[in-house]
Length: 200
Image (cartoon, rainbow, N blue to C red; front, top):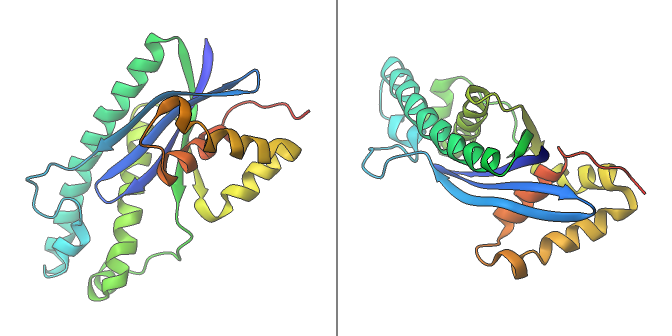
């Protein structure tokens, strides 16, 4: 079996996912999709902390737990679809790299709900943890990669070839077509960190 890795860049209510292989110096995008993990009719699903900000703490905790459970179920289902595609092509997953922010640890829930900037930070953590748990549910090892550290990590792994790797990723758009935005580029870079590589 060939090896592949996943990379995910998270947004509120969805994740940009790529499945990547790297062999004989070539990068191949095996799958690329947007995994939506909230229903369009679910009130507050895409911004659960915003939806919970006017609730009592106990109600907010219950609301957030239910929102997490629903999002986790959807994320697990989306990941299973990708796994099935890769297995059908005889690829074995080495893991999933989830890009993270460089924020500070979150305070208690009551402080989060009282400060609007913290609502956004908490939702970022919320959806990244949804995907991490979904990976765990599908027996996929998770590696969290701080987005600000991505270039340093690439340099450490690929050495003098790191610049060439970045250039190849940039021009993959010619082969795979749109969308090929920062989401897909950074997710691809993160996924490559999980694949075997021998420096030359």
